[in-house]
Amino acid sequence: MKLQLTRLGDTRMFTAHGQGHVAVNGVRYDSSIVVQADEVHSDWNPADFDDLTEADFEYFLKLKPEVLLFGTGTTQRFAHPKLYRMLTEARIAVEFMDTPAACRTYNILVAEDRNVVAAILV
Image: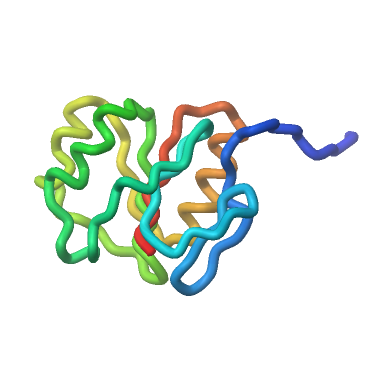
């Protein structure tokens, strides 16, 4: 079987991650971001995981993803379901994982042309 690199054009993909930063298509981000196949949003700025509110999750309703991957930093953490209830009611799957796992999973799903959004807390 022949294996070759898939050409994804202008699709936004994670190209690096490290302590306190991620890179999307080679551009480094040192603050929290939201990534979709066609855009990087830097206007989503929760200060800390412990300070997340329902409003922080309502942000994703307008993006209408099938799946929201929530990168929680170096350690996997879970928000209380009441904070993102409106997303599950809108039939949006929400997955919490550490940031490296969220970056890898996002890249796989976006390469499969899935409607996925990654929210990365840095």
